[in-house]
Image (cartoon, rainbow, N blue to C red; front, side, top):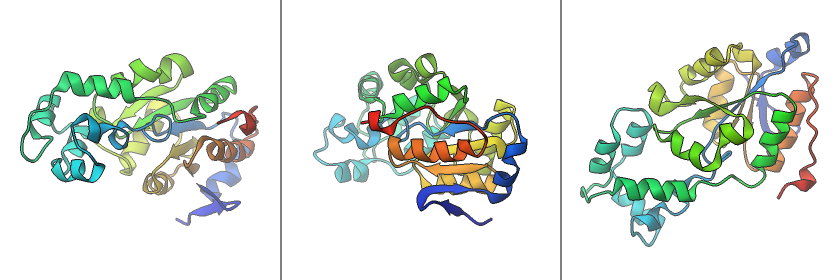
Length: 236
């Protein structure tokens, strides 16, 4: 499958699906990543300091490889995460760690306006996150569902599979009750965008910042007869 850039922007779209989009009455759904797309990822923003490291590289060197990925896949429990988190098996205070996460989650600048705009346009937003069973901590803090109507459709820690595995994209579409060709991915990881297109998604937008995401979403949705009422000048 050929990935086609649109207007030189970090967006790719399946040309076959695009050519038939005008025939479909229902607007596409937005399948959005969460961490570092809608919400700032604490792993890269303060986690090293929380555990007493002066720099991020020392923190990564001390951490057990793949322990977080295994937690994201549901292969280990949170108790096992605490036991295995560091190579030297230093203790991890789970309540303190969770409190750090709660205090660290915050919206990526401009994405609150983006989500509100999609909601006003009656565009469904389904969250698809490579994250452990702690998605409730994110919801408690930034309220992606309660405040913006985004649906927690796929969390890898509960599904046992991560993006860019095709199964992840297929399950989102199935749970949302739409065809793969009616899904548009928004994700900060290019490999996840490529995986979505290979799975059959209409389009995949490589998220860089909220202004760029709005422009690219507006372009894709315009092909489906949907106009986003938003001005990127209002975005930070």
